[in-house]
Image (cartoon, rainbow, N blue to C red; front, side, top):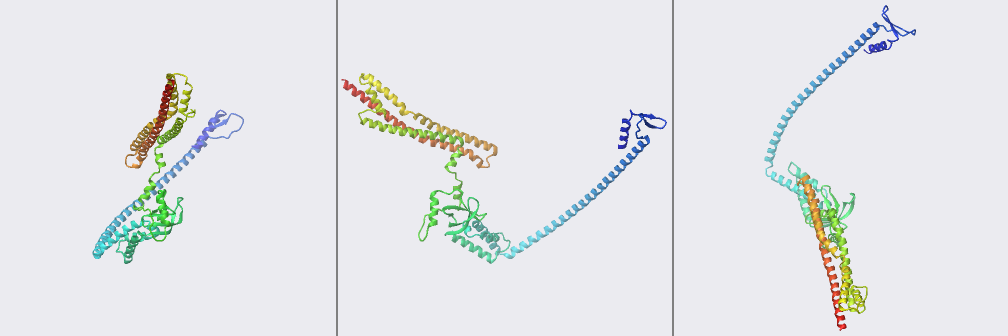
Amino acid sequence: MKLFKLAGLSLCAGAAAMSLDLTQGTFAPAQAQEQPQITLDQVLEAVRRERRQVSEENRQREQRFLAERNNQQAELNRVRQQVVAAEAESTRLEGVMEQNQARIDELSQELAAKQGEFQELFGAARSAASDLNVQVTNSIISAQLPGRGAELQQIAQTETLPTEEQLVFLWETMIQQIAEQAKVVTFEAEVVGADGQPRAEEVTRIGPFVAFSDGRYLTYKGDLGVLQFLARQPGKVATDAARRVERATGEGFVRGVIDPSLGTLLSLVVETPTVVERVRQGRAVGYTIIVVASLAALLGIYKWVTLTMTANAVNAQVRRKKASKNNPLGRVMLAYENSQSADVETIALKLDDAILKEVPKLEGGLNLVKVIAAVAPLLGLLGTVIGMINTFQAITLFGTGDPQIMAGGISEALVTTVLGLIAAIPLLLLHAFASGAARRVTQVLEEQAAGIIAQHAEGGR
């Protein structure tokens, strides 16, 4: 076919330059230049040769396909034979397993009959070893006396009667655990620090209750068999008690601190959030309350201090005859001195005007403190509503299966309420004290002004 196409293309391409010679059955060039001659017989032969070649290729391809099919069929038959053999082997093994299980049951019954009363001892020893293993594994005593749990676990998991040596070890371990619970011991042990690297430290242990090193309390990881410093130490009272126990020598008693829950209370100390962490739970609303309340508290303290100083200055002015511009009463007295020649009504008006000028200076800023004291609980209520919205959203997304998912929203709701109340109470007290000081100063001014008017009226008579 390829040769036929080439011949056809050649014939088409040279049709314009060639003429047909009917006597010879060939194409002759129309031009004088000589061209290679291709006869129709040659084209026919090329086509036949191409067809024979294609037929041979198709026959070879068909033979390959048949051979591959036969190979696949043989492989399939082989796999089927393997499956049949495997099923037969499985059936045989199941029969063997049933026979073995029956034999095991028979031997177990025979063993139970021969053990007799020792069977009860066997169960008691395994139970005691299992309970003691749990206690020893999680006890701080094992930090000083490691390696006891492996033997106890072997006794607890054995399928045969315990040996005499195992029973003696079990009894001695019980007595040892009881004896160590009443001791205060100092020993060398590896302690894992905050960087995760173990270091040799001198550890003091009070029975199975607590252990500490250099005044810092430790926790024992029974699964890892290592001592670790608590991520957050308890208060100063507890750490000072630990140092006293470490430094104690000779006879007598030393006041110390123990954890009767064997580590549970200390772990709660670590998990209990600090004041800063509590404040962070209030988020944006909590921070707003703190900032606003702090500014109002500073303003309230400033006004209280200045009003107290002003009251002292006014009291000092009362005892002096000469008026001074440095205090409200002095300025009121100067207003009287500037209008002594007027009548009583005019002087009264002048003094009232001078007092009215002093009152805004005395009471300035107090209303702002009062307003913030009233707004702080409202901000806390706003944070409560936002926290409850977040809680309900968490419940909608994750359900109520995990309380920790809802803890964030509930903490925000409660913390903001507390912050609002904590801000409002002292601000109200500051406002009351400052307002009282302002009223006392105003009252003194009014009393002195009335006295001045009365004295002036008597002098005019």
